[in-house]
Length: 619
Image 1 (cartoon, rainbow, N blue to C red):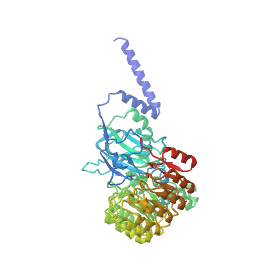
Image 2 (image 1 turned 180 degrees about the vertical axis):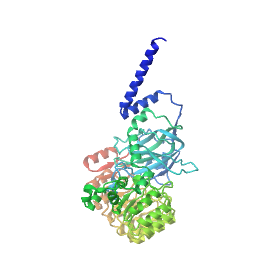
Image 3 (image 1 turned 180 degrees about the horizontal axis):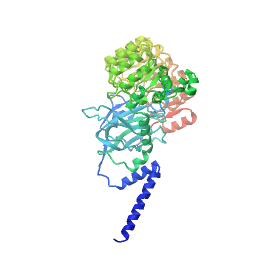
Image 4 (image 1 turned 45 degrees about the horizontal axis):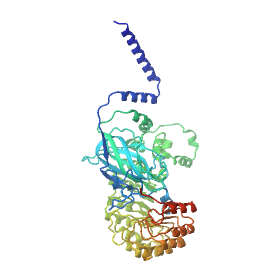
């Protein structure tokens, strides 16, 4: 044998020993990076990438448009792009209902729930279905105006087109980030680095937070890239997923999945300690105060440590205000059952976004309210598609003290079911955005206790809004805010009755109400009768004119927000009078006002720097 071969053998063994030694001493990051590099050097199986546009929009929390139109609606996200790469305000895009913090500064703004985890900042969502289930490799979001609202992208294990629904629906976060402000309103293709998941999906969910945006964000399309076969972990995925791997291990360790979260609710085995140290010397109230800063999962974890803390963590006083919306993907009937004994004193409950795709049943929801509904004052059920007539009947019977009810986007509730809500005599705030409401408004007006009402129809079945407005004027003398966004048939007669009777109104939204005409004097009469107005939206009413603006300047000096988007009849001179008179004005939307060009906006901005003057554009 040639002496070369033993030398090669020795060198091979030496190289192998070096690799073994490095493997023992390498950090976790080095090991994963090296393995990823080695995996990339091997030949990968042929796996053709599939590129898909959304086939269908399955669900969403809100949109700027109306239900019987395509302008500014979420349905524009289905199919190929309509606008991209153009920038600007286009009706063919998907637009959510709000932006910035303006709605949080209104008289109708609601107090936030405490104990919301800092990682949950979502305000709206949209769910998109695709033709083929794939293992996602990339998600491209085509944003055409004021980008930067998307904060989370999730994938679902359930196939919306399958005839056999799965026993368990699993949601996986592909990407998540805190809200960030993007410089400039120009269009962009947003392609965040997503993590790989271990199941194929054709259901993608975007969650958005528009609080940092200067104006409405507009989305044109969402492109899903993926492969049919589960891919080998790539270098890129390995590098970006290191933190996610740690989080996954923490989730397994501390139990953040649905099953483990439910197990935390029902603690059985607790440690026995002869003494609890200094905790035994602390007042009960002080421990309760300390624990009030924990999130719900943390509270459940702490309850597993010892009997003393279990007693504190299960005290109903810790659950006076409870928001389960941040955990919408994990909450089911079992969760509600475990929480029943802790929520006997609950006053505020947020179940928004929860319970869909069979997670919460009508019987499970009813059982919970029968035990925990007697003290409820505020109930948030936005986008609760499991709700039906039985649920509303249970709410009426079991929640006699209910003052605030949010049923926005609960579009599966039949019209006749809303008659039950009219029986809640203490109701002061009602949100019926995107619901099939009919006769309930007449009954609620008769109660005379309504203070805040948000009303936008899914099915425009109310034939006489003037009658509703007249009844409000006669019975709801304490009404402070009213949202009649896109009410198609209200006229100057109804507005006159409303203004005469509800003179405490501070907030009124008449956006996209085309039957209101300035020539009838309805807006000047409104200004004279409602001197306390702080917010007035007359969006897309082409007839608003200088006379209306000058009357607002003279009569509504407390005005803070005014939207006159789309009018052709308002001049710069009347706007100057308004800005000079209304010292508290902070928001003025003059988008698509033909007499107010960019030069005028720059001049007004210079003279009134404390006012945010909005002027959208179309490229």
